[in-house]
Length: 139
Image (cartoon, rainbow, N blue to C red; front, side, top):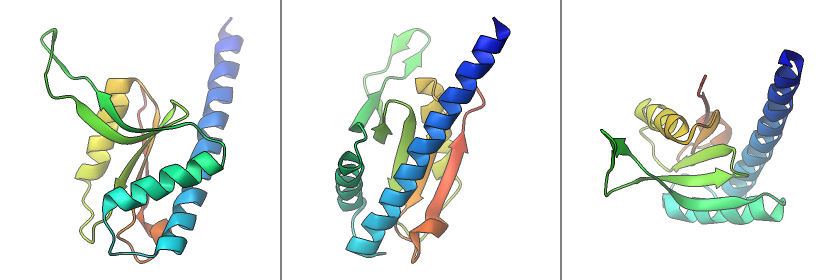
């Protein structure tokens, strides 16, 4: 029984890794095509969504994440930029002033959604590959 769980975890991780590989490739393509830095985050988000869809991935934009406080669901949910294949969260940024709070925010989303992997992609970098940060929720 334990072996089955371990195999399931390995397969899940392989799938997450494959998805993140596609996301990173798509982000590089978007940055190469649109250029950067200098555009709005929303434009990069729309282009990245299009690119991921072209690669055959299911992408949800601006996904609401409910927040509970003492058993009460708060009226203002959080929103994640992209949820890819219902497994990987993508938070897009377009700033010259990257801070670790972006990774902390993504980790909070992962915990609230009980997911393991997130990527923060800062399109504000001259080379987007320098702006990709992997965030892992150790569950």
